[in-house]
Image (cartoon, rainbow, N blue to C red; front, side):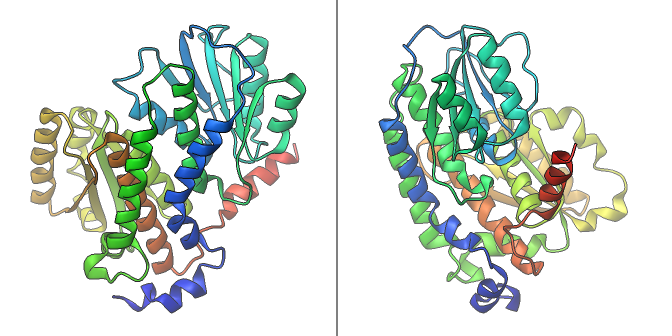
Amino acid sequence: MKKGLSPENLRKLDKSNMLDLLLDFPAQCMAAASIAENASINFKNKDFGKVVFCGLGGSAIGADLVRSYLYFESKIPIQVFREYSLPACVDNTTLVFLSSYSGNTEETLSAYKEAKERGAALIAISSGGQLKEHAKKDNVTFIEIPKGLPPRCALGYMSIIPLCILERLGLIKDVRPSINQTVKVLEELKKRSLSWHISQKDNIAKSVALKLFNKLAVIYSASVHFDICATRFRGQLAENSKALSSSHLFPEMNHNEIAGWQNPAKLFKNFVVIMLRDKGMHPRVVKRMDITGGILKNEGVELIEIWSHGEDLLSRIFSLIYIGDFISYYLAILYGIDPTPVDRVTYLKNQLAKT
């Protein structure tokens, strides 16, 4: 193992204790389920025509997970909007989740106002801020989650809570068994394959991080159920590792991006392709991944396959996310940086606040 991933170096660089948040993530998922079960809903159940999530960044990624997980189960459309304004489809038949960890995300607050004016049923989720103030004033359902986390580290709250609420509203089947199974899988992964004390030989996250050091990651997954995993991984590499990467989805990438793997060939030695794979993927997608992998290897591109863990779909989705989170953490350490601060995001928000 490189000196960069030694326990001493982790403690030295990880000044904000991101590692503890990663290790505590399975417990967060259990806590999220409890919060949802005890939450008060301030409107009567009705026949919703659609479910809409409004949020940005780490506050929206949980919505992506809900949408991806329920791809085949939900009989009504589930959409995620990352904008100031809402499309015309949001009306009084819409259930709208407003997700903002801080409660002060300006785009989400703008969407809140529009959704309220259109008579949608609203559920706000945050740790406080202006969103809490508006919800309390307007008698809107508000679900408060613990403070003190980077928004991207609140994924358990931002995904498990909406899933449990959708179940309570009768829109999906009982999700608690899947949550329990997910927590077991994540605890096992942490114990056997991800935690800081496990050597590189047995630690998939450390092994992949070392291969990504000073390289550009290109992440591929299936679009059904696992697009969230690719999106999350790309976001975590950006925020934790402060590293650029790209992502695309099968089968769509076979209809465009695969043609681009010819030029500039001299850069391919600096790329590492990561395929996120799962036993439940469509057999034709599996075949496409196999053929595409062969093409990339013939171009001299390094290819890494990361497989999901668990039997239940929710646990398999979360397992790929959890592995990616740890990879991004160890890569940050290899780059010699604290993974938690996102100085450029903070700077941009401060500049916007001046106008």
